[in-house]
Length: 219
Length: 339
Image 1 (cartoon, rainbow over the protein chains, first blue to last red):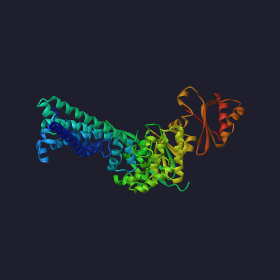
Image 2: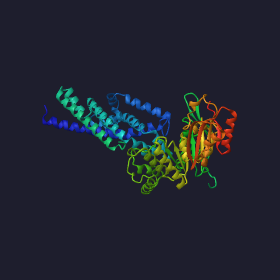
Image 3: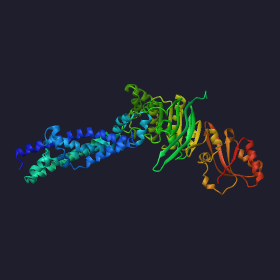
Image 4: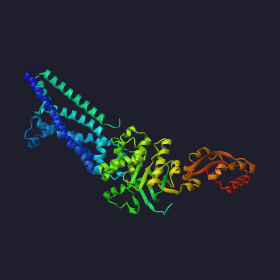
């Protein structure tokens, strides 16, 4: 079943999956991290309270999060076409992954930042720190271990989404699993893809946890 | 003490917090002058509003009404930006220390200087000096999780001093520490007050802390100042119920006597008298005995005070004779109203 063509196909798919996950995670954090910070800062007990704005932002994030990924993938096709010039393949999937993951990451970041002791923030305020300084010098560094754990969760979730995109012309391991395993009923191929996905998830999770633990000075 | 200058002035401070229905007023109009260079205590039971009051001084809580002045400058009218600037001249330490857990002791002390825009090399040098000052010169690279409670509070003190503040606000700074560590931290605060001339405001619920380091004290009860004066006077003669409660607290448990024992008096011996057997002589000379309910001695500002709760005889003549005997010898006697 696994001739050399198949092996090179799997190899390409493997790297495509990694590429999609890493690139999407990066861009999703570029959007999600500031969103998470804004959510925490504008909370009614936050460092720059703006309750109405906070609620509206919260609702928008919830709406985006509640759209099923496959529907988002289809609905975004015109947008994806406009941005990367195609609606199939890894590149197109990245666009959708970023949009799907950013609100999820915003919530992950929010919950990590909320773990930071309110008293430490108060201490920084008492020293004359501005809201921006509190974000960059207190909230983010203090929440770093938790943020790293969150990023491992985010990456594994994004990897899962990327596999789902295989149904709609996305690339990577998911596409191979669907095209060979499902449409051509090559169950063994599907199984191998699933095993590879499991291995990647395990590695991402373990590495994330280790980096987090290693960076935490509370231990 | 030199010419009395006012460092902190609070006028008509009111603070209420919005609730689901209406609002809860925590401070009902507080007027307070704290002099330059003194250690001023604010004591009260929990929920009395003392923590809110100290947060009103550096405007972590904005008073609903009233003005706050620091060294003549009104803080309540400043913009957020100017207020941040002004906060650099007000250090604050907390019950739970509130150190940055992901930074070393040295980096913690550097933090306020980073915000103030001090050059990194200068900040590190100053932070090292400050950690020396608080007795942690050898722990600069330790993280807070590697330090004991007392050491954490010392780091917090060094951090609070980093921007050369005019005042240091201490919010229950020793309440999370054991008695020995508390004594060490109080000693350090006293030393800092003497050496750097910083005005210190101490918030506490423990009379011991007040006795140990404060010059003057305000007793806060239900959002108002119940009583204010020198620590010595308040201790010797607390006029209000809450004042008596706080002063007697450790020596006498009020509840134990409620409605049971009549003719109870609190007697306070001062300085030299506590070394003489005044009470024994009184009993011999007056030919009568008293019942000792409780007693202790305390050190206030290098002076020894002894206080006792005594039950005097029922016979009025003898009782009055005894009380006169004591007051003639400079012992303060005051009927205690336990009911």
